[in-house]
Every structure is written in structure tokens, then in C-alpha cells.
Amino acid sequence: MTIEEMKAQLSQHLSKKRFIHTLGVVDAAVELAEQYGADIEKAKLAALLHDSAKEYKLKDMQAVVESKGLAVDSMMRNSGALLHGLAGMIVAEQDYGVIDPEVLEAIRVHTTGKPHMSKLDKIVFLADYIEVNRDFPGVEALRDLAKENLNQAVLLGYDNTIQFLLDSKATIYTLTIEGRNALIEEIQANSREK
Ligand SMILES: [Fe+2]
Ligand SMILES: [Fe+2]
Image (cartoon, rainbow, N blue to C red; front, side, top):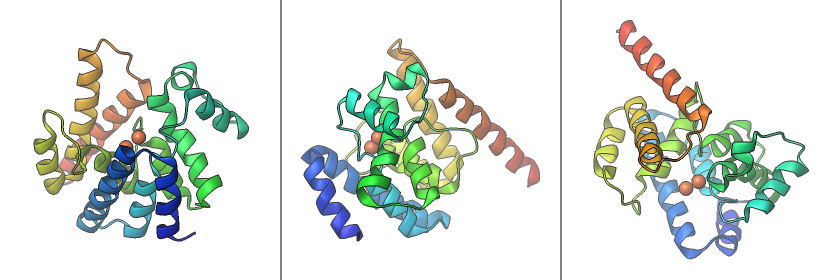
């Protein structure tokens, strides 16, 4: 399937708002990939399909995940906000024919982050926050930082999410905390090398 065919299929399955968001993420991901030397075609593909399962009902996301025999913990299982990453990975594979494991992984982890994300994972994670249609307090600072330093921008993305969850008295997925911790260690190790 070509990218254009994927876009046409996706537009049938997403609301207009979500489709516009998706195209914004594609543009942001391509820009980041150019800037930071990641594979542009992979960034485009992962960004295009990152929310392919986002508008599924929770029970349908669960069914998609169970159909592959994948085990998830109860917190992820019961949260569409978390589960649509994993479900989207499966949809990208089954309905859009994506086979590249790096692209599939970037789709899977965009909802949670994780320790030791690849450059592609980070780009999709970050593009989701900074795409042009996003409007939240601090988005401009995040866009500016994304032009300067990929790791620092991803860290600010984690911080924004965690702060939002704290303010909302919401649960925080452990993997997100672990991802942030590992990123801080990575940033510290990089600065020691210099
Ligand atoms: Fe998403
Ligand atoms: Fe998204």
C-alpha cells in the first residue's frame, strides 16, 4: 500500500479532527527526522498511523490486542489513552501492511514512552505534542526546544504529561516514569562524554 492509499483509507476511519491532527504529526515528524538525521520515510509512516486505533471503542482495542494474544497489565487494558498505541501497532500491521519493526514500535510506544527509545520513537512521541494544530500551555516552548535538542524536548514532553496527570489527580503509568528516568540518565551520560 502506498502512503497515499494509506491516507485515503485512514481518512475513512478517523474523524476530520483526528485526521487533521495526524497530518500535522506527519509534517512535524518529517521535519524532526530531517533535522536529527532519522529515516524520513519511517517517520512519515509511523506518524501517519500512530493514532490509527485511537477512535476505536475500548472494547474493540482490547479485542485487537487479544486477537494477537498480547498480554497487557490492567492499567493499560482499561485505558484507551494508553492502549491505542499497542492497538494502533496491530492495526498498522494488519490493515495497512506495515512490517517494519522500527515503525511498529514507534507507533506502539507513542502513548507511554519507554526507557531507551530509539530516535524514531522519540520523533513520533514529540511530533504528537508539537504538531501545528496543538494548543496547550507551554506548546510554544516545547516547539522551540524541539528545534534545539531532541532529548531535552522529549524530556519536557514527559514532564508536561506527568504534570498534567499530577494536576488531574490521575494515575501515572509506571513505564512513563521509567522512560523519563532513563532519558535523564541518557542526557547526563551524553553531557559527561563532552
Ligand atoms: Fe495517540
Ligand atoms: Fe496523536
